[in-house]
Amino acid sequence: ADAVVMATGATPSVWEKLKKTGLNLQPPVPSLFTFNIKDERLSDLSGISFPEVAIKIAGTKLEEQGPLLITHWGLSGPAVLKLSAWGARPLAQQRYRFEILVNFLPQYHFDSFREHFQQFRSEFPNRKIKNYPTGPIPNRYWEQILQVADIAPDLPVAELPKKAINKLAEELTQAKFEVTGKSTFKEEFVTCGGISLSEINLQTMESRQFPGLYFSGEVLDIDALTGGFNFQACWTTAWIISESV
Image: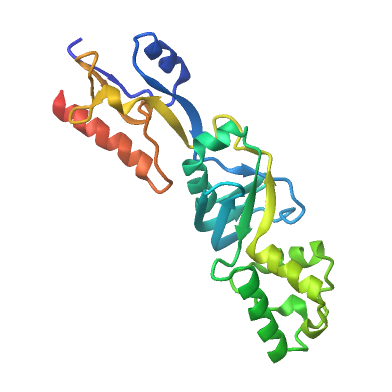
């Protein structure tokens, strides 16, 4: 053939064959995956979403903000998917067992939320804690937090002890969750790894070692955040090849 185009995506069998040619392949690991979490705070709340949260992987500098979704198996949504993309390799090294800190109210931190709550309590001392205006926090999740924190929903905010206020501040601004795994095999969206870009002439997407051999899309060591960027990488590299061929 005058030209051979490899557009095989994340296909392990193809990568194994390409290794035998001497091409440099970066080891593939999953990217854009969801977090498996078993926690009573998430129990029976599948489908509940949050418009904006901040998530940090404990012990690392990995942190992201965005919408969050509770699923049957844990947490998903753009915030989680973006975090899994940045952390694809380090999280694989940890065998997808790690701790995350979730701030459901990114405009606050622990101390500033306590100050905010104290001000609310002074203005509305007789308001029942179940009717506290949680803003972007869904009511069902707020009810779940009160239950887990062992706070009576009908308790007036003025009677809430300091320990309970600290617990609420922690649950809303730095809630800890233990991640015990990721999406099951083949449910990840993208693969990190593949043919190293140093092997490719990026003007044509042609192999530097083997003239006439071209690579497009996810077979290459490229992966992007959620939002259509991975599709665009496939289309763009294919277009470059078509122009070159």
